Image (cartoon, rainbow, N blue to C red; front, side, top):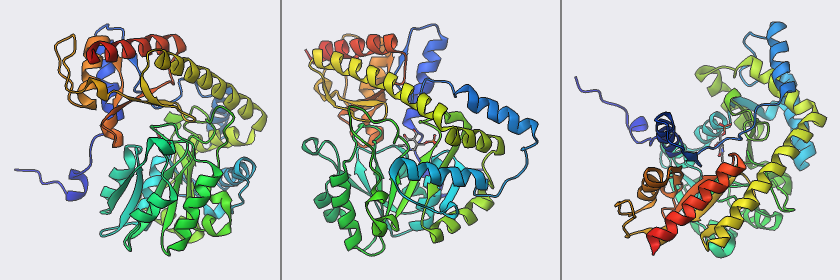
Length: 404
Ligand code: PLP
């Protein structure tokens, strides 16, 4: 019997980030010395005091169901943390804690967009956004950002993309994959456009907010006034700032009506996220002294790697987007397109580049096509600095040899 899948799931692509990592792992298992730039998570362990809190929670029997949207203590800690970090006040009832940042992202799109609706996605974008829109039956409207604007969408570009069907704008600052960070002025101009149009909400993915470098500061669009705050859903979580990707704790902070709808949906889909991971996260958010020190240390390490990587790319004259946040560098490899490699491959696009680079130089990168930018590949500097330097050297030599 032929298995007939629904339109909803048939259109969903596999995550390219995970696919390249899987291939790199296979080569590693074969004994090859692969530099894996595909990773999207800090190469730090979760700090010990957070792990201890999880063990304590288990011993104390905090192993039962919790309210679907999360334990009240964690919601309170989340709003306090937000107030301290970005100066915006919320009520704990506006918080919905879910499985990583991904589930709240999905819940938010599902709450606001459906068939016939449009979701504005500045490009390059994080792989998951268009897939979420598709899953909800909505159409992604991509706004191609420009180098002269630091790969950030301008207010004028947003205005042009808005139609009567627009329901949602997805903003991601600091950005994956470009590392771009929106300034207060840029966000303020975007907020003005949003507020001119009834019925449009901003989904502001701020998961990398603690990882900003070079004296820049993260600004949340919700901090720019009560009106835009009432039109914004914040997405945040423990994954990147606290090196807790595997614990799967993220959250949305949304206007009450949206938060209630998201909670209702989640109560049937998954109920609460793992109770022990919630208590561990509570320790992370409330033990401020230790967490500030941990995050500052991680930021310093990432920054030093960022500068080391940028230096090698510059020395080789490579074309790339100067990253200001997160832990990625987006490198333009289009000079190699249409050319044969020394290993006998012909490169036609970013996927072909990534494959040839992995096979010939044992360096794994993510093709830019996954982020809507086929001239690029993404590298992650969440890896050890000596491997990083070696991998970037190999990448640059591969580009030079092929482009010759
Ligand atoms: N948002 C962005 C921009 C990301 O890069 C990621 C993870 O790579 C997420 C959200 C998902 O985070 P989580 O692992 O907490 O679901």
